Amino acid sequence: MTATQPAPKPPLTSRPSKRQTLSWALYDWANSAYATVVIAGFFPVFFTQYWAADLTSARSTQVLGYASSAASLILVASAPVLGALADQLGAKKRFLLGFTLLGVLATGALYWLEAGHWGLALALYLAGLLGFFGSNVFNDALITDVAAVEDYEHASSLAYALGYLGGGLLFAFNVVMVLTPDTFGLADKSDAVRIAFLSCALWWALFSIPLAWFVPESRGIGSRGLSAAARGAFAELSATLGKVRLLPNTFLFLVAYWFYIDGVDTIVFMAVKYGLDLGFPDSSLMVALLITQFVGFPAALAFGRLGAVWGPKPSILLAIGVYSLVVIAAAWMQRVEHFYALAVAIGLVQGGIQALSRSLFASLIPAGETTELFGFYNMIGKFAAVLGPFLVGTTAAMSGDPRFSLLPILLLFLIGALLLWRVDVAGGRADAVAFHRV
Image 1: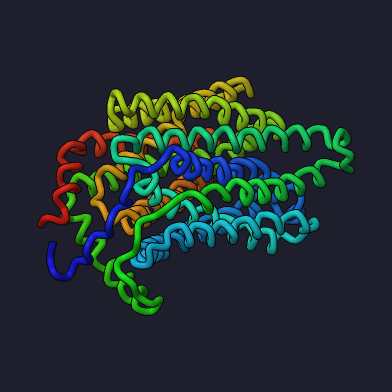
Image 2: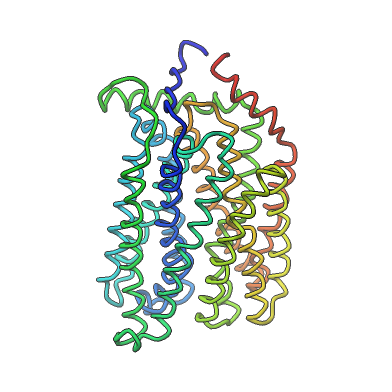
């Protein structure tokens, strides 16, 4: 280790308990409700039909896309800095809970918005996205504090499985409420959707409590004030790329991840819009999302076991192959039953590819650098979330046929698979272990 590199932070002194691991995993149960209820489910439809009903379809799609891209770009710029600062202060959990509070307040505030206030709805959506994505930076980094190295695949897959189950349960309740508002004593679907946003905020807050109480974290680098920690954070950030360059397999994995997670995130963001463009009823699209959630729960657990037995790299390559077939099949989809079938296929691999990517990356980075490098990892994922929807929108505009709009994603999956194939996992893990000995 050179004199300019910070000393590694001391690890936790005892093996993490099952309660700590489960409390950490429950955060995915908590915040996945936002991904399902708000991002993938009700917000795109409700924004178009309620808050922005006076706008043209093209204009509402445009401004919604800009809000999503803005949140991603803000996280691209800030995630590595925040991650480095959290490493300096030993404050991963505090940062996570701060972003959680932002997301909870913004999501809950959607309940009080009346029709026509599309500008304020977008602002709250942007704040909610920042809370959701920002909290994930620090939640991902905490995996090294709640699981031993040999348990990363299990812990990560458990978290994603709980996320699918928790988000799916709340979403299922909300779908029933929206489809039968009179059963719940509500005036119409609009009231039901607004209550869905409020329930999502309460769910997110409630199930974050176990993490706040029971999850530990490693100490920061020494005892220092905020200003000194901030200076150290920028110094650490300036060295991040240099560190990654010393870990060639880790760097290659990050480039591969950038491409294939672009495709995954784009499908999450665009699936409902794609189905609406094909003329499928919104109620059917909600059912398809429920299918993905509940298939995703056991599938994420199964992928965790597959990753432990077969290895994370081959398992991720399998998931990329399934996604590639889904993109090809989507271009020829004719009936809503086809949409359901693709929802099953996505559910089989979506949680697995996310969980195993997180655990594989965790095994390729040096001890003591987790939050900083997970900030970089999340930055790459958020940049992909900017690029993918742009490619889909451009293709749709140029072709004039929404069926062709998803095809650019196929190229992203193929490039990601080819790069991942070249990653030497064993060599990368050895480099990570030896990093601080250099």
